[in-house]
Structure formats: C-alpha cells, structure tokens
Amino acid sequence: MINRRQLMLGASLLALTPSMALAQAKNAAEVAVEAAKKFAGTEISIVWEAGLQSLDPLNYSGPKWEKLTGIKVKVVEVPTDQMFTKIMQDFRSGAGAYDALNVIPSWMPDLVKAGALEPLDAMVDQFGYRDELQDIAAAYRDNQMKVGDKIYGFPDDGDVMLLYYRKDIFEDPKMMEEFKAKHGYDLAPPKDWKQFSEIGQFITDKMAPKTYGAGFFRAAPYPQYMYQERFRMEGGKFFDAETMKSTVNSDVGVKVLQDMLADNKFMPPGVEQWNFVDNLANFLQGATAMTISWPPYGRWAAGYGSGEEALNWVPKTQVAGKVGYSINPLGRPELGVGFALSVSSASKNKEAAYLFIQWLNSKQTSLERVQLPYTLRDPFRTSHYESAEYRKLWPDAGAYLDTIKLSGEKGLLDLSMLQQDKYDEAMSKALSSLFAGTDPKAVADEMAAQFDAITEKVGADKQKEIYQAWAAKPGAYP
Image 1: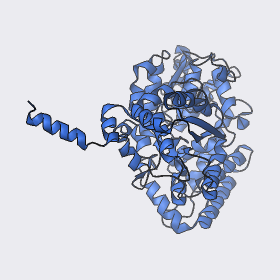
Image 2 (image 1 turned 30 degrees about the horizontal axis):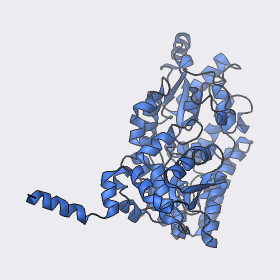
Image 3 (image 1 turned 180 degrees about the horizontal axis):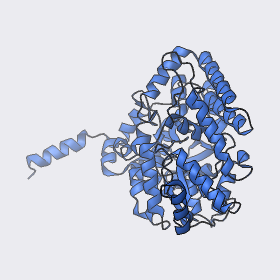
Image 4 (image 1 turned 45 degrees about the vertical axis):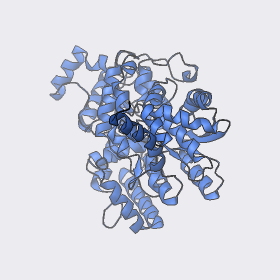
C-alpha cells in the first residue's frame, strides 16, 4: 500500500523538468555530457590563445569531449593581442564563425556593451551549474564572471603574480648573517619594494655574475601588469574620478617608474629586452635569485612536466627543490590577464557551446585540466587548492597551492574600461620607452596624454560610469 509520503515524493519527481532531475542526479560535468549528446555529429568552434594554452583543447579536452558526446571541437588559435579584435569582428559581421570564446575579463564590459557575449544565467539554471560556481575562488568568481547582475563568463584561469625566490640562497647561514648585519632585518622574501631593492642589490654584490639578485620580463606586453600593481600599491590612481583626467603622471606615478628603472641596475645585463621566456630561462638556470611571474614558473622550476615534448623549449631546471613561493612585495599581487569562458551571441550553436564550457569549467574536468603539465591553465577553484592529488605532484606543491590561494584572495584586478586594449597598449608603450632610456617624467606625461586621448574618444561620461563601477570593486584599489 502506498503511503502519503511516497505519493508526495512521486509528485515532486514528476514536477521536475528532465534537466532538473538530471542535475540532481549528476554532477555538472555529467549533466553537460548527457545533455550534449543530442548534438552528436555537429561541430562547435572555440577561440583559444595561440601557443601552449591551446594544447588543452587540441590534445586533451577537445578529443575527450568528442569521445563523450560525439561533438567535434574546432580550436581557433589567436594571438592574445588579437583576440579582442577577432571576437568583435566576428560579432559585427554576423558571420557566427565562433561559438565558444576565451575572454580576458578586463574586456568583458566592452564586449557586453557591444552585445557580443551571450548572457548565461538561464542555461546555468537549466543545467544545474549554479552551485558548482560557488567553488570558484571568490577573487575570480566575484570579479570575472558578471557584468552588472548577469553572468557572461566562467572564470577559468587562476592567473595571479607570485614571487619566486631561491630558498638555498635566502637560507644560507653566511648570507643571512651578513645581510642582517648590513640592513638590520632578516633575509627573507621582501615585504615591500625597498626591501626588494636592498635584497636584490645585496645578492648581486655577493654572487654576480653567477647569480644576480633578481630578474624580470621587461619586453612588452607583460610588464604593464606589474606596473598596474606597483602603481596602485604605492598609492596611485589611474584617473580623477570626477573629471576622468588621467593621473598616471602624478608624483607617485613618476616615482614608480623611477624605481622600476632603478631595479634594473642589480639585474643581469640586457634585462631591459627580456621577454617571458628569457626571464624563465635565467631563473631556471640559477642566474637570478628572485623573480615575479605567473604560476607556471613554479611548476616548471620544480621540474613538473619536464618529460613533455610540448615543453622542450623550457630549459631544464637547475633549481628544483630550491625554490620558495611568496606573495609579492606590499601584499596585493596583480590578477594579471586571466581567462573566462563565454558563448558568442552570434553563435548558431549556443546551447552546444554552453554545454562544452560548463563541462570544461566544472569541478571534475577543470581539476584535470589545471594539472596538465604542458598548458598554462592555473588553479582557480577552492577544490583545486585543496586537491590531495595536486598536492602530491612535487614535494613543495602544497606550499605552491597555498601561495596561489593567498595571492588570489589578496589580488588586484586589472584596469577594466571601454576600449581597455587601447589603455593596455599605452601602458606597454610607456614601459618600453622607459626601459629604452626615456626620462621617467616624460614617460609618465606621455602615458597620461594617451590615456586622456582614449577617454575623450570613447566619451568621458561613458568611461566615468564604467570606471566608477570598476573602482568600487574590492580588488580595484588597495
């Protein structure tokens, strides 16, 4: 005999839509796979950063998705500095050549205002993904997912700048004793930029030319992210919030440029031309005692992935087991670049594209992806930081994940304005000019002039609204 409780349970199950019932029965990755099977035999395209990043969908996730669902994934590789333009061109032409997108979060206001991104909330609820989004670390979830109150992208890359330092040098008793005698404080990861300079110069004086105190990438475009962090942490503001006149040429702005230039003096000769790979090579080969970069440096310094054919270009590490991880000087590192997964509003396969990015971004699949040694996807979920599997990948992997977690919690957002790519270009050109020998005050004045020209072209009132919304976020200014 059926009792009242059984009748009520049956009625509640009948009330569920098929997708809701499926969502309750399976995790987000499994839901996406099951729902996507109806699109078997079709092809979707996804825009991905050219290079190592694209090896994820080309070699791993794309083929796996096709095997699970029967949907083929076409990977469209685009250089980072061309991605925004290509996405906008496809949208404006109405061609619909792209279905899913990788979007740098600082571009999202521009893309949403243009109408190029599909709002995702309805599909998030339809396919039961909202709960799993809460596992994405707050720094990314709260700042890189929505424009206004709508979801337009899933944060998918835990980009944040970290300080790497040589533990064997910093913990050498003789070095520690001599440094303490000279400067009056312990030799340890620098708490501010004054300590960074003093430590860097001390190590260079003691160990160069075998090992210099520090090294940074200085060639465009990446130094601008380090500039954004340091400028704000020293007290700088990008604009006057009322007039929208740029204030990057304030006294603080000039001082930051002067200090960045001065740091080159205790770095290896030629550092002014170093790119991402030059800086990596020098650190891995033991030529520098400190550097700041994204999380992949930490994995490669430990030797993780050294047998991978795709990483043949990475020099063999000479510092495995000797590298420590720390938060940057002044304690608020840049969440530099990052990627979010979105759906093109011009796509003719929106649901299929959505299901693919839900599966990619899910707790289950993303944990597999951030452990791929040959790509640049970095941990971005609480479950990634806590993963026992990840923490066993090399002896110091736990400390590495703890530092990424802390740095993400403290992280500063990239400036995000309409036509942000133009402001980024202005900062990159300014720093290239600085490192080529132009006077810091002249560099700051020219950068401010370029900022003002961009603002005027877009419209100061439009930019004021965008800037005030960005500046109100907890990671905009310290």
